[in-house]
Amino acid sequence: MSLWQSIADNLRSEIARGLWPPGTKLPAEAELASRYGVNRHTLRHATRVLADEGLLYSRRGAGVFVAASPVDYPLGDRVRFHRNIELAGRVPGRKLDAVMTRPVSADEAVALGLNIGDKVHVAEGISMVDFKPVALFRTVFPADLLPDLPGRLRERQSITAALSDCGIADYRRVSTRVTARVADATQAVKLQLDPGEPLLRTEALSESGGRMIERGLTWWVAERVTLTLPHDS
Amino acid sequence: MSLWQSIADNLRSEIARGLWPPGTKLPAEAELASRYGVNRHTLRHATRVLADEGLLYSRRGAGVFVAASPVDYPLGDRVRFHRNIELAGRVPGRKLDAVMTRPVSADEAVALGLNIGDKVHVAEGISMVDFKPVALFRTVFPADLLPDLPGRLRERQSITAALSDCGIADYRRVSTRVTARVADATQAVKLQLDPGEPLLRTEALSESGGRMIERGLTWWVAERVTLTLPHDS
DNA sequence: ACTAATTTGTTCGTATGTATG
DNA sequence: ACATACATACGAACAAATTAG
Image 1: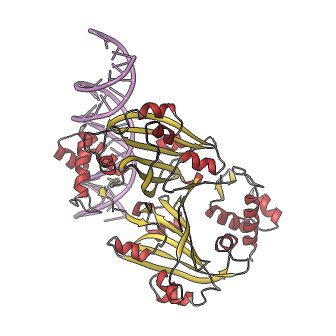
Image 2: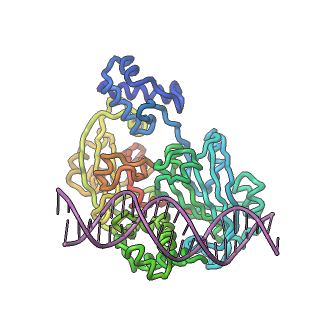
Image 3: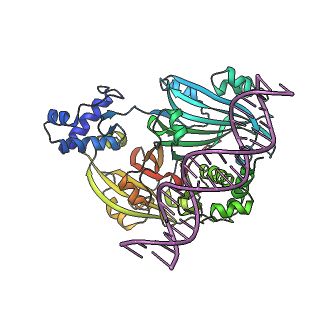
């Protein structure tokens, strides 16, 4: 086993054991290199590999830092943000930026099976984990099915709870599509990250009782969340 | 409905109908604006929205172009690149950059259920659709189970076929994790895109007959693929 | 290698219609 | 009725990147 590999393994296990918590600044490369008794190039080889794995990141002139361990977010048939995050032992939160009712757009109409001119409720906001933003969402609901939804959304913390108040006891994902984009300036500000950082974009359609009930677009901060897929076997 | 919205809808439907095939350069903004009888700002508002949706992209000094429609890539229990792409009516391809055998790394050992010191075969390369690169992959196999794999991989076009030659007739995904990173310089060159463009990174584990058979890392060009999830109902 | 023409990107200014309270 | 705020639309000019000759 090469020197850089054993150093990488060493650091990896130390990070895994919590010896260097997320956000910690590692000692300077020169310092660490002398501790391991290797040349700075050798140490850099190890940290570069860990950075590729997403465990570390470096900022020129600032230092090498331990990346925040991303939240695992399972994308199953019944995706519920609050439950998912609580099951992972973290604190879920949501900030509602806007709730409005407006005519459906062309692409939304196709997705939800509506006609031009029909109205939709739109909820926009930010999802948080441990009081840090992890995602932006824009969710669209057919207004005719859910006349009371805007009010309920403002009262309740979770979308699931608001839908339940409107008589939608259960709903299921029928399709999920995943792609990625880099954050623009507006998204970066809302998510407290730098523009150009990658976002995972999911487009989800849910139905209940034969009607499309929800079309949700979510932009996840890639470095703060890992989407996991169901493999029912 | 505002002017820019109807222009956007018009262009959207024209693109959907194939009137402007992927890669086509649209007429210059000034030209298009005069055709629609609007100011250039108004036209730009429409094209900006379509660019946000991923239907168009613009290059200063060059023009506005119709984006190549991304390939839908289903992530199910039995993921087979060649079959998936052919089913979408496109031409799959693979370029093998390297096949080697080396000791397993720490994280690979955990994933595949191996011990330190065990050997793995590694296959690295580029996946293509319609002769354009869409993804980088690095796939790792336990060497003890598949002594002949390196030779087979070099002979055959698809990993599925090579595994079949080694007696693995069938294998299933047991876990898939999705996150995103921006492309570094090396990845950008291999994938023929600009550094800083977002990549979707999937980490997949597959098993066959009770043994982990494969751990595949794939970096997808986000603008050229959309990952779709199974929702078995 | 250089220039000129073309094309998108950005920033001024101005005006109008439409909700809101 | 009025003031305010916001989105929409037009006009002009210039900057920056690309392409053609």
